[in-house]
Length: 396
Picture 1 (cartoon, rainbow, N blue to C red):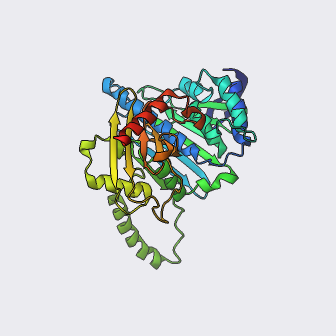
Picture 2: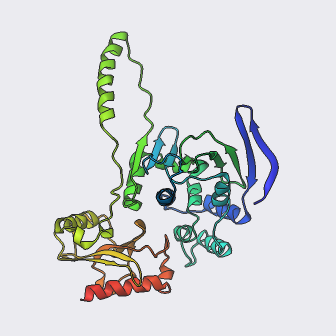
Picture 3: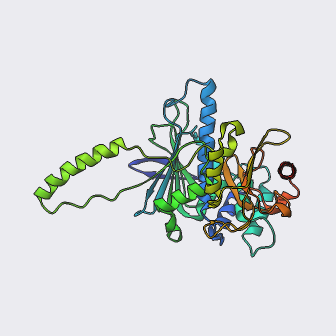
């Protein structure tokens, strides 16, 4: 990590160190900034996945360490969107990061195959030459945080680690060659990521849009995900009498709001991660309706749970009819493929033979990387084992 001699100082703020990205990060950011990548919503999946990892890590840490900052704070992910200012803040109460963690995690690509990554990324940013897509590269090489620069004009990360005496730090970057680090005043454990959206990404500064993306990609993350928006200030009443009347109504509304707790956007509990003995027939049927929008009951279903030789959690359905009506949200054949409850492929047609293409369902594996390219399906031994296991189960 190279540091410039220059520092940025404001009389009202702490000194901020200006540091330079490593070469491979500069190249990556340039590719992301200038790519014609269309499925930019992937940035939210990546940031939520990172937040979930941070929550898992603090959960594990607290099993053996009682000396943790904010041990009683609920483990959760909160999104606050300012639709008017076109900003989004993603907060978690996870393990947090120190100054060194911020430099290591956000200033470098923590992957031994950085050169391979850049070769693939250069190809994906081109005209399309049969290589991996940018989405697939981002997931496979563990650089998901940087995908936020596809939509962000500026990113500010403020984090405080779980160490009780730790200092909070703020990392900030506009995606150019440098980033800055400065002490912060954050009192609670965890990480806040604030994104200022680019003008052409303003569509993501919308509560409904964010909730839709979460339901699509992160519905089964183990921790609750809450989405709220900054409410615009109320307009002044025309006269004092209206103020008096509205005050009483506001008091009643405030009491009602206090009583009404926000609901998580995500389901959290993935049906396929449960043991078959814990799931009843009606739950299987309801999940099928949610999965396919087919309101006829499935002909058959099969719930597969195995840990060896590879981790597989799957629910497969045989529809009553081959054609299942106009209300299907996805008219593509294939299974939904998850890695650790994170959706990585909407319609994977390679996990079953062609003659089973009518089968609906979900497949999840702890052993899969976050993203898998089509080219990897034939060569990846884990995927081959999953394919054999699913095919064998259906042929019984």
